[in-house]
Image (tube, rainbow, N blue to C red; front, side, top):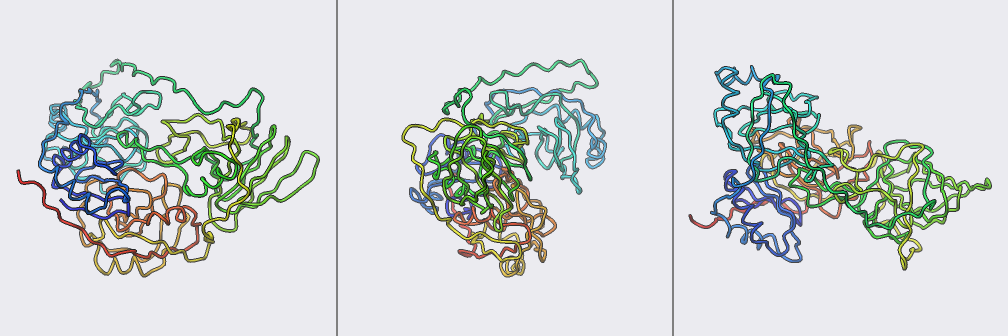
Length: 535
């Protein structure tokens, strides 16, 4: 067992194979360790989040090693049958690679019983293990930009079903009419870790009837409801997509869903503190300004994060400039405009009482990669504001924690080297740390695409899928790094050379296009080999 560094509060435990990984995952679930948070399994690894104030990484490694050597009980889960039309675009190519007929591929694929080993890539996407080893084929050399929802594919030792239309590089052998992910179903993901799966060949039978899935019970919204005819805002104009964000949805890894939430969590909390809300109340994340709205009723707003110029035009025609990082009282009819900030990327606008927005899977965060959460606000929308709870105190003002970067400037981010630093040549690691990386326009809440001297890998084989975190710096085949932000995928198949330190995650979420990033290692890469129990 190897323990690889990820961040100050997270490690990646590497094991010998999938069976050992699942057995250890089950053991840690059955015997919770104090201080350990979410555990995300993958093909050969467990990503373990922990509280360093309760348990050290060294102590965690020893405890985890003590559970090695057990047997997995995962194959005892419920059975899910998936009907398939075996007419995939790559069926003939897969057969040619294996030196068999298409009929042989269909027969071998349908004869096995699969296990949902882990989830990732997209909500509802399950990695199914246990198939016939003769069907192990590599991913496509050139991934498709468009794979339809329901496509059944092969990649290495795994089978998977695409839950939604997306890019993908798996070899497609068929399609299913089943919905793999339905937000109105409980649980939303059809395939849960530990479930057993069989594929049923339905040929060209277009009459196959899909059974209706049980719908999720309607959740009770326990936030204070806005009074009839109460306060709200009327959206007049928007620039880039303006999203509802809170602190994200944790505990959904079993459905292939990462936390998401505000790209700058500190700024979100600050805006809420200024108006007397709970730190995680839903606010609007405004990227590069461009928002205008009219106040309906009275309210108190605050804007934190990127210092977007804030102007107010009253119903009587008076105009004033409001301060950033201060609570601002609004009257009925006031028109508020946020301009483009001179520094940073994202501003957070909170209203006293919070926005009356329905949560999705326990959170009001909009995950742009998973396509989960409230829709972006649009011109003409009316967004209600909840009544503030009794005793909620409005702050006077707060100072921003750091000065935010501007286009053309250098930004230094502290990084923790690992978990896959050793997959790169020494010269590549030196280049990664010594050169400035240009922030390109191909950046979003999912990640920042960087441009610079390409990084050369020392290990060129395919990396089995493993969990990634907010702040992971993944290096695809191009050698140009991608710094993952809040809407990153839960798992990835490219090596992560380093991870942004926790204290610089908010800063990373504010770096604009045109800035340059330099990475400062907080320590050198060290992996630890820990012997387990003898079996």
